Length: 518
Image (cartoon, rainbow, N blue to C red; front, side, top):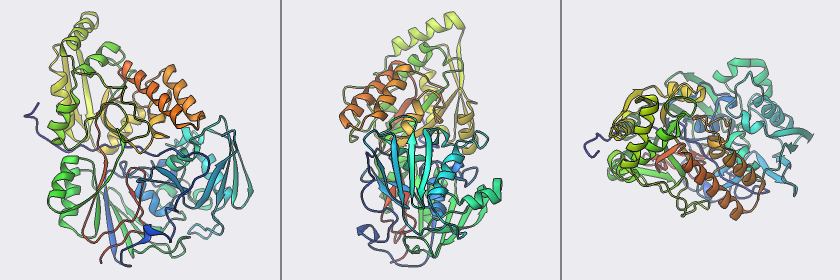
C-alpha cells in the first residue's frame, strides 16, 4: 500500500465528552476570572474555519463537538450550560453553577446563575431549560439529542434558578450527557415565535449575537454586551464553512487572525513544520470504518471478520497519515482512564480472511459493496486492502459532507468512513454502540454491550466503569463491529497572535475569551 497517494481525511462525525460524578466542579469555562483569561488584546475580528456546516443552528440540529463543525457555531450564540474542559477531562460549570445528585443518581438538581438573560431580553431560567430539554423529545423535531433528553422522567422548576430532574434510571454520568448533548439552550420565546425559522436566525444567551448566515459560506456574529461573564474581547466573529481539509489549511496559512480545524495529522505536521501553532486535544476513538449490519454483505459475520483480518493498523497510519497519527490497539487511547491493555484488536491474517470469504462466496456469491467518504484517500486504501481478497470488489463513493452524514443518520449506506473523537466515553461512545443509539449508524445490536453500558452508567466507581468498557470492547471486537482505523486527535491551527485560553470537548475554542493581535 506504500504507493497509495496520501490524502486528507475529514472525520465528519467526531463526537466527545467526559465523565463527571455528582457535582460539577472546577473553573467556570465562560467566566471572567482565573488564569484562563490571561493574555490577549481587546478588539479585532477572528475567523474560525471549520468543516461542513449544520443543517440549522437550532440546538436540536447541533452536535456538541468541534469535529462536526457544530460546536463553535453553537457556543458563540448559546454559550454553555455546562462545559467539558478538554485538558482536564472534567465537566465544569458555565451558565449553570452546578448539577448535583442525591445518592440514588436518579434525582438531580441543576442550579443556574441568577439574572442571566437571552439576547431578546427574556430570562434564562429553569423553565427555559425545561422547555428546551422537553422539546428535544418531540419526535416531529428529529433532534440529534433526543436519546439523551429521553433519559428524563420528569422535571420541575422549583424556582427561577433551580431545576429538579428525575431520570428514568440512575445515571452517574448525567453531567457528561448534559454537557455533551443538552448544553445549548435557546430562547423559548424565539423558538415559539420563529418556529422553523429559528434554525436560520437563532437567539441564545451566549457571548455573541447572531447577525447573518450565508449558506455554505459563513455565519457572522457580533459581541453580546450583556453576556453574563462580560462582553467578549473580539469586535466581530466569523465562522466559515470550508469542507475541504487542504483548503482549510491553505486558508489559515495565507490569512491572519484565524483558527482552522484540521483532521489530518499529516496536514497538521506539515503546518507545524512551517511555523504554525497547532493545538491538540488528546482523544480516544479515531477515524472509523462503519459497516451497516442490516445490509448485505455485512449482515454476515464472516465478511466483517474477513475485512478486520485484512486490515493492518500500522500500515494504514504510515500510508495515509505518514505515521503522524497513533496506531490504536483498542477503542481507547493509552492515556485514557478507561484504557485496558489486555483488550486488543486482532492482528492481520490474510489466509483466514480468504477462507472466510471463500465460505461466503460459496454460499452467497461474490462480495461487492461501496464505501461512502468525503475524502477519497483513506477509502482508497481500504479499497485496495480489501480487494487483496479474491471475490471482493469495492467501490469508493465520494460525497459532500452533509450528504454523507445525512446518509449515516438515515442508514442509506453499506459502508462509510467517519470518525468518533471522545475525551471520555459518555455520551457519544454509548450512543455509537447502544442498540437504537442516535449515532449507531451501523445498526449494531448486542445484549452484552447494552447490559454493560447500563451497568457503567449506574456506577460511580471508576474501576467498575473501566471493567465495563473492557467488556464492551471485547464484544465489539468479537462481533467485528465498527473499526477504529487510526487514532486522530482533535487539532486546530492558529495564526500568530491568536490566543484561545481554553478549549472544550474535542476542541471547541472558548470564543468569548479568544483574542487577536498582541
